[in-house]
Image (cartoon, rainbow, N blue to C red; front, side):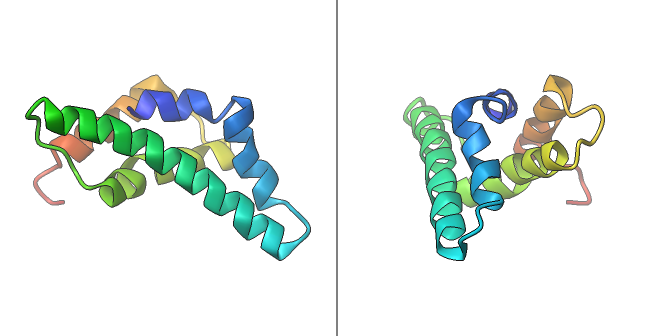
Length: 102
């Protein structure tokens, strides 16, 4: 799930997030960001729904966005080193099995 997000950031659809963020018109920026959020949310919701249908316990979509998607976008925007597949998998692992102090 998180690996898709990391790879998607470099594709044209993922780049739309960054284009929307720097759009000169505020309404255009908001509409573009809303569209990006809807696209990301629908992809994750589909994966969550499929897992739930298989009888797996799934987190809420908002939790996935907060714990997986947001950190990945942040790290890509600010070019944080080691934002790679291992990091993405670690986010998912923490989401599915949070540390004791979480």
